[in-house]
Length: 420
Image (tube, rainbow, N blue to C red; front, top):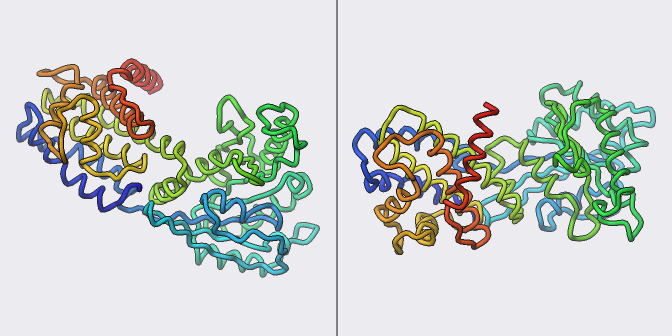
């Protein structure tokens, strides 16, 4: 299972019970809670209530593994993998449904586009017209341009084609993420994975650098700060980055990096369906961590406001919503009962169903200051620690109290304060 928009709405409707049961709550605090929780809910509504299918447009020459890449990203066989080389430009749309995960994707495979490019790099007018019609019809969020290592060095005209098409189509042309597929061709059978073979890793990195140079992206950052082998992000509105992959056999290499890069640059309304469709725990864990950071920042704003005592029930509601979301991202159903299960596991009174008073009492115990104004630091660290504790519980089935994360939470808060 995953986050069902209907269950999300039901969950948020029940948050008022926290305010009614929370210690020291009054009419003013309930009003403040409505405002603050409304901000948090609004922050998630685009992600959940307005969730839609992502739209990806896949480009590349025949034989580069476009269909394999679609299947690898989706974690299921949806595109036919074959060796037929198209002689005309045509597009194959795929509507991929992930019904058990409340998700779907729209993927358009543009077949034959680059086969229509002449050796001198000229793009036929009808090719531009067909692409224009495709982009108008499908309105893709992103373009995924797939290449193989041998094509990178020999196919500068392909990059020039992208530039010409962008010039022809203007704002209709979405950002491009380059995928350098089949990088295993750099390696002998006993030279994989590349992390264990510096020579192979060096060849992959040189091709990544070559792509960045050809498209003129001098400002590039490794996706993983300590390992440029996994790809680059570009500081550009036209080009997202370049990512290498290996898809010949499972376990697929570096698909998670490609997926996270794509998802990060999708419109927020398309992100949830893109990520939760893939059954990749590490992706949803990153999503969970990002939500914890977001809610902790909201909590710090609440704590920093001049509302002594009254901000406590606001935090309780915010934190309970965070626990429910983390459970949903872990592919539990997002219900008050699943959040209650976590609260009970952390030492709260055993509850059957949703008992707001018991939950509020337990969450109240996590806040180290009672009867006084809650500082931005305390609001941030307690919320962040709760999110991380819930992550361990729902993703790893480990019962680790929020207190175990408090020191780490303080370091995160201090780092953000220093950077801010």
